[in-house]
Length: 337
Image 1 (cartoon, rainbow, N blue to C red):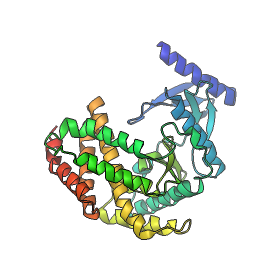
Image 2: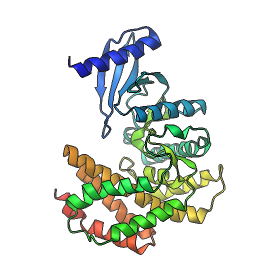
Image 3: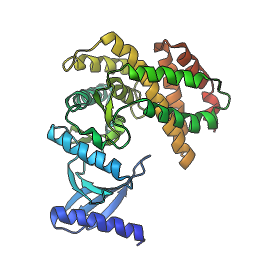
Image 4: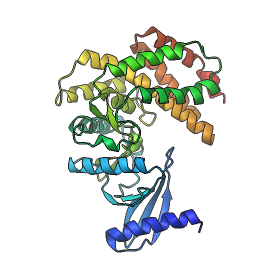
């Protein structure tokens, strides 16, 4: 056994023993997708739990503390069983292996939409009911979705997708104009809600016919529209244009039960936040491709670019229209990688 593996096993063993007085019988490493975290299923005395090892202690602390607050509010999130003194290891409730993404693949369209509507109802509860119940000092990146986040997301998009693969893209100051517009949008938005940051079907589990929520450690204060866009334009939510519109309407109608808001402005701004979200995921896909040469990322990038093309019909800013037209015109060039 390597030195690191021994540390990992011993650390999980200590947490399991603190909780149950039992020793770990075995452990199995689970897939962590694009995350740097190491995720394990731990078996002990006929019981099991999930063990997380992550060398970013602030990220771990954010997840643990947010989980504690969400549980007090009655939200379906994993119970935290133990947290190491160095904040590098924690154990939590095992929610199984069935994500919402995998669950809907086995269901018809009506059942899929029903589950997606249920997830969006829960999203509103996260966004509105918890917004004043969280300690945002535990946010490990920024406490609010602001211009620094936008700069980082557009920077990754530029460095890993635009610069590397879309060499024919018009590289005048168009990107700067688009970023300036998006910065103004964020400054003019109501950023006083909880922003999940990565609300999508891969981060929702189905257990005993109930939806449970994970991977909210990047949460912070922010606008409502971003999480809605994250979900209905997600690469893990296979939706038609009509289904996306239907889910947006459902979200808006349910939101009225919680807050008063300007519906016309909400809808107009929503499509720009969808644009911002798609830029973020395209940058992340390109980053993963660059690091791992995972060919699945090329298809994800293609789909993201096609969603931008669809979105362009709902955007009125000429610089963004031109920006998207430049990107999508080079889509086929990228797919040949």
